[in-house]
Length: 437
Ligand SMILES: Cc1cc2nc3c(=O)[nH]c(=O)nc-3n(C[C@H](O)[C@H](O)[C@H](O)COP(=O)(O)OP(=O)(O)OC[C@H]3O[C@@H](n4cnc5c(N)ncnc54)[C@H](O)[C@@H]3O)c2cc1C
Image 1 (tube, rainbow, N blue to C red):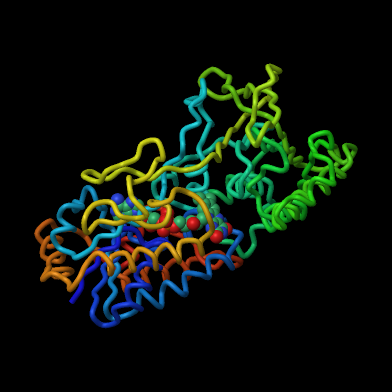
Image 2: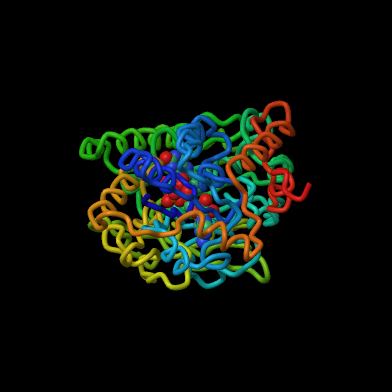
């Protein structure tokens, strides 16, 4: 029997398990660890609550999870409850699929000021991640500045702009829904160092900004490149730029007639956050783009800002004993190989890029690599060895059956128009799982 430990139950973790099942069939036993009592990583805590159809991918992961030779070992943090060295002793291969949960720091003067948040924290807040549920962002000011030109920036801007009714059918958590319903924000600035041709925003997400009940998106026509140049873009980006051109047609006169204006500010590099105790404004330098890079022009201005959310990327959390590439913000690895028997996959391998589906070839690739590196499995104790360790440490392991009870409880307590009301604290999740009854 081959024993595989996968650390992280997000897309990369489950695709790796699926690939191992396909390759080794009944000759493999797979344990999927997660530090939280609930599975699926960013599908639950990252993907926007109003994008329920995307979250449907978990049905595929559930098929993998329910197989006899796959276990979910929730509520166990690798690196503190159990070490990577211990897992390497117990399993033939250990695959780190821990994602990239930390915000890349802004690294600007004033980035410590109050009401300046990274997107991991802000998105975690509205999606009910236990670590960020208490974030309590102040939405009583007039202007929010969202830094970044990717889909996460669009998610954040859209969530800030939506009315309570527009969240019908979503699983946004109650504390965020209530806070957003009282929001006084009337202007959302999306700030990007480069121009419309350099955005990382996809047409679906950008298109949604054009269909909001109480918000209108604006682009300064002067920021748009010559229309003829759009022909050189790949088709997805061309569609996104066409949408921006549409926003440039939203007449200035409509600004006063709508509760919320969403302004794209291109060629604008944030240089510092201004305020005493809490943020009041953001200092920006105008840029021009040369060979794809933003170059400062020396022209500065300030944007009043009562709330700042930076959406500029993520980093993996280091784990004791695992070589880490500080510059890249992920485990030091060669195509997924870290040390003999130790691998990484998904965002923990390649950083925060690509879609959910990008993690599938990654998962299949790492399993092929394990097969190529290892001959017949060694006689390792596998899951039985872990169970003994967990019992000796009195770890409160949450199984997949426990998770299904948590899920059922979340569905039962959902408000009328929502698929679930998530528990946002680990102890609530544990109680709902039936532990401690
Ligand atoms: C805000 C946001 C919105 C997104 N929206 C979309 C979208 O609409 N469509 C799309 O295709 N993609 C979207 N993505 C990208 C998608 O979520 C990622 O591609 C995918 O989740 C990465 O998978 P992963 O398994 O590598 O990491 P993750 O999904 O982050 O999973 C990592 C897992 O590891 C666990 N873990 C971490 N450390 C430990 C530890 N030490 N011990 C045990 N467990 C640990 C975590 O709890 C987590 O469950 C979005 C991403 C973000 C941030």
